[in-house]
Length: 233
Image (cartoon, rainbow, N blue to C red):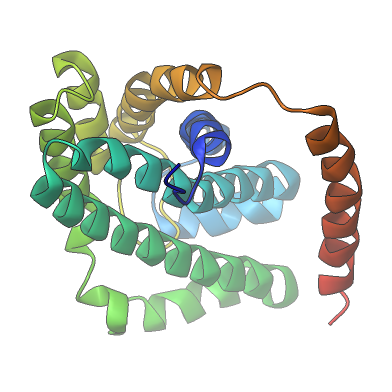
C-alpha cells in the first residue's frame, strides 16, 4: 500500500474543519467596518469577539494546508500539472495569510499596550512597507482559480462546487482586513466545495482499531501538555 501524507483521516478532517473555521472567523468579524482603523477600534471595544474571529480564521488558514494537499492528491491522478501549479500557488498563499495574521496579532498587542490612536498611527506609518509576501500576494487569490480549474478538469469537483472553490479567491487580502460581502461569499463557496468531499473522504477510511484509540489518548494528552509548555517560553 502506498503511504500518502496527509493520510485520509487528516486530509478528510481538514477538508471539513478548514473551510468551517474560515467561515466562522469571517462571520465573527462581520459586525465591524472593513479597514484597519475600525478593526483596531473593534479589538479595543470588543476584544474577546475580535480575538476569537481572527483566531478562528488563522486556525482555518493553517488547517487548510492539509485540505489542499488532500485535494491536490485527487486532482493529480488525472491532471498532474494543474494539481502541481494549483497546489503550489495556494500553499504559498496560505503562508502569506499566516504572515498577515502575525502582523494582525502585533497590531492588536500594540492597541492593548499603546491605545487605539497610537496603534493606528503606528500601523498607518508602516502599512505599505515591502516584505517578501508583498511580491507573492497574487498567490492568495490566483492560486484558487488555478486549483478550481484543475479540480473541474479532473472531475474531482462538479461545476457548481468548482465555482465555489474559485470563489475563495474573492477573499480580501492583506493586514487587518475585516469582512465584506465578498468575504462571506468566498468562505461559503469554500464550504460548498470542500466540506462534502471531506465527509466522503472520512467515510472511506477504515474503522479505527482499539489499539488506535488507546494510542490516541496519551498522544493527545501529551500534545496538550506540550502546547501549554510552549506558552511559557
